[in-house]
Image (cartoon, rainbow, N blue to C red; front, side, top):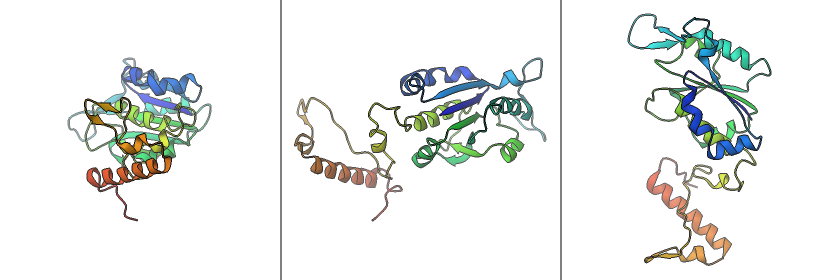
Length: 226
């Protein structure tokens, strides 16, 4: 996947994009990640990318021109499959969206800042708007990092065990079952006997039952009756 991030504070993305699974994906050549500083595309001598809002009010608005110039640079080599804008009023991000985005070849994420972007960009350029929750962050960078991590781990070859992502919470509208590791008995805290039995079918049955029970108790909004 070729992934572009448009931001005014690229330094915020240094840590999440240079460690763990995202770094591994890049090292394996499965992810080509490019972070673009929108200020580099400003024609203003001070590299300004924002201005006052028409009609007044507090806060600044990200201007159209620097963002379009950045997008024009990105689109010189090929057309984007999707241009995502991270915004609190976007569609709530979930596992199904992550699955779908992981199949794309060329993706860009625009990180909002200040009071957001000029709405004409949302009307004419942005193809998808995503929110990671009903709260407001200082900018879209950390939200973008969440989306990227969720999507990239689904690309075949990124995880060492490719079946791992398929058994994560929300993949089948159920929460994941409880998991345990050695020792089997820690000061009287014991691992369920079925997990030590070696009977694959019984273990799979137990895990499914636990997933259903956990979903009923913790996220009944996700549970679907047969």
